[in-house]
Length: 314
Image (cartoon, rainbow, N blue to C red; front, side, top):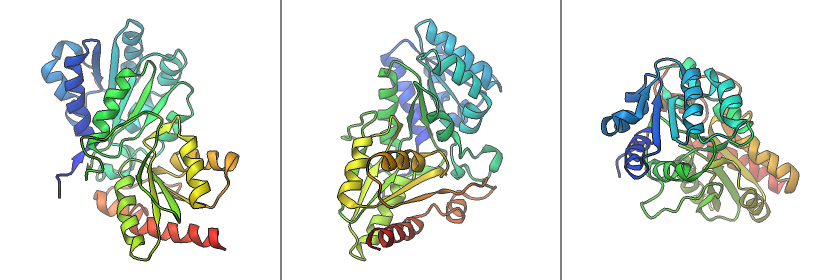
């Protein structure tokens, strides 16, 4: 089995590599560069790296200024602080004027683990996808993260990249083609569709293997771009399989599940079940234990699939 790599690690490597390709890339961090892995960029381009201290609002405001001056700033902190503490700056100084700032936030979700509820961001997708002009990307593994960083550089406008702390197994190989706003069908299936993002894509693959043993044919879609969501792929899956399960390491309120439901209710209503954190804060614990407790494991997806199938066939 290949080594598990955290998406934050892949981000750091991609950032350093892209820095050599594009001299306009600058990086800002809120005194967390070793954790967010922007230290990789700082090591090779110290004159283009700015440690802003524990001051996310100032960091995002400064990033907006750098973007207005023609730079391509990547601003990083933990997701709960980047999106929560600096929401107003993101809204009014970045999204509203549509400035070319890339907010790459790490340590998202409950898999942050022992840092506990104060650091486990389960509302950041919801916050970011409500803002006009902002692209929201949630990579599923290290390969996709590197491709997403490259794509973010090419987008002329604000981007939110949601990254994690936990090492993840590879879903894709180096030949993988990433396109913003275009979901990827990881596995074909005819009975039901699982639409997942982030670490839940790997869990969906495991769930599909368990379901195959029961002769249930499961389609898996990696919805790496939450906004703009790939409406056509969602509608096609609904029409062809007749039931949907969404899976995300985020609150079921306002995240991927909500985004998919919005598409379905307007275009192709089918039974949908949602896997995610259910209107509660997290707690301190080992990542695997937390994913188990909050119902984010492959077995939980299997249960949701069977429930959706019962509704479909009822």
